[in-house]
Image (tube, rainbow, N blue to C red):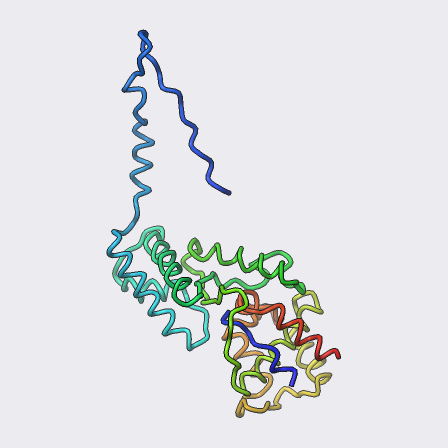
Length: 274
């Protein structure tokens, strides 16, 4: 069916320092004392030293890679604090988050090289870009994804992370029938959100649009066991990050922003519309 064509892919430059001209003595030679950097500049350079030795950074980043890959089966966004505790332990202090920032940056290098994956800040559509809640073409979606991923290393302590596929046109295995049905429902809901400015009240979705699709809140779907449609939307889609729910309304979640294939989504919608 049309659902088989949709699969969600688990998938200011620094200004150069202005060099002050060296002072010259009366005989024209450079004054060696004047060429030395001021004490404040030397102190600033000292504070910019890496927070970890190379060997420890290698060890901790490898630990982070193993942890995020093993945890991905839960399909839930990863709390930054959870990653910090898993990698650094509960008792190690990390003022300003410098250590975990360095670890995430190094872990991302490994993830990109080994798996084509990357940890990105799990923002919703409203957080990622001003107009990300609107239907986006491939170029806009890619720009949103790039901007969102750039914030992964520098996110706040309360932020969450999502493991996303960064390979162009990555090959993905065809999901089982149950997942295909679920992804088809996900894509249908996301299209409804796009058609309504990126935000749709829960009551309108369940009371108006589900009946138009021939569905009832307590219906079950093939391959998805006893899970009701209302629970697939309000619980599973929210838990996995496809949707966020605020003030009784749904919007695109971080997984929809970061991992959705615009090409597959357009194909899916085109087939539905005939």
